[in-house]
Length: 296
Length: 272
Image (tube, rainbow over all chains, first blue to last red; front, top):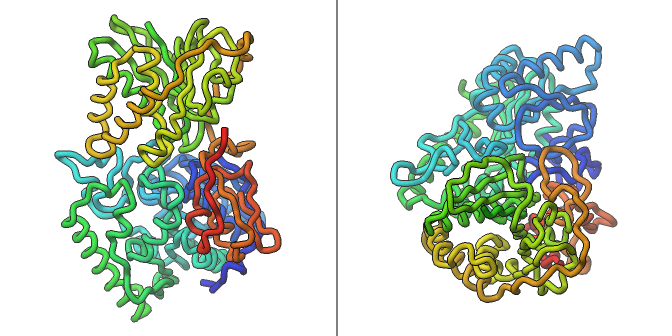
């Protein structure tokens, strides 16, 4: 990825605002940052999802299942037309990436189609009213993983999708966060110059669905990274692994969990369980980073 | 049958308020329906909800078009004459508004009552979630539900500390509401659609989404660009390295206020 400072981020905006997203919307900011880096030589593709931000680019749309197939068509048509200056870009939620869109995503990745796929990941189906997805973390409350006498929120941890995509041996896979805009834009600029299937998973907190005050969107996104709940890394050609944010010591996950209503019900024991999970995962990532090799 | 229409903004609890009324009157042995308007509601965007109350089972299932009572739980929507669209002659317009009804500009052949629910909510809940306070005013002004039934409905839905504070908001509004006065002007509002934002895309202005407005102290600002880069709506542009806020684009989320490292941005309550 490219190393940037905040002064290197282009001033030009590619979103048309104000949009119809909620106050403090994480995905709206993700769209703004991503398209700032991509510019307007882009055909953007979307599937059913919250509105995030309208961009100054042509925008195509398909059903949930078929983002991978539709993007394949766009990218191949551009190739036939000789327009290698235009990018086929998917800007798709976690439902259209992790769950419903997964089959077509995997197929397009396996064919190494010339696609840039961004997952605006807010860890549930927010557009339809906060239903769990396979990106929803362990014990998070959603309207379909209720908290009550018979439920403690989601029963299973989220799927490790960036690793699954990397196991397709595609040129570039990365995770990013809206709280780290220079890291995010550096990764987008790097991916933009490559060819083949590129995937960036961006964690975008959702004040409405995660139950926190809209002014804290960035704080929550930052804490996700600083506590190790959402590690920032990149995987190149499915072989090289590199952490792009490596604090000396992680903050306790409690700081991240306690400020969100969706984790309000957690007991100390449950927080400890999540802490153990995060610690184990972080150890593993540090080891991968040290060896520099992606094992799959 | 009494029909009620609620106006509010996503996040203020209009839908919850409609359900609380329905639960409270059901406790008193009456029949009720609470109907949320389904669309692509967003936190901050204008939304509507409806309630029907009767002594007999209610067979109607459509939306309320000619309400007996209109309740507006947002102070800025309370300025829009279109909230009274369809309100019956002699009906009641209950507004969350800081001044007495005599100072409300909306005219028509109905009664107007006001309560400063935003101030009450900020002082009791710490957040501008105005639904429960407005319900206290509703109970006092209309007598349709007893305060006690509303309290029970609130405590059932919000157990613990949050419920207690909401009951406090309810009781304060019950005391502080300005009783109904005939609406000032003789004119019916122009029959336009009541405010309700649905759908996707670009809006003209979101200035009236805000409860608080960010104000930059340019003397304190160190030009770090953080407020600029973190604004989801590109409401902040840089002029000579200093942030200038476009208030038509600012939804008042407060990210810039929260993220400013030198506390150069103040969050000031919008006046109505």
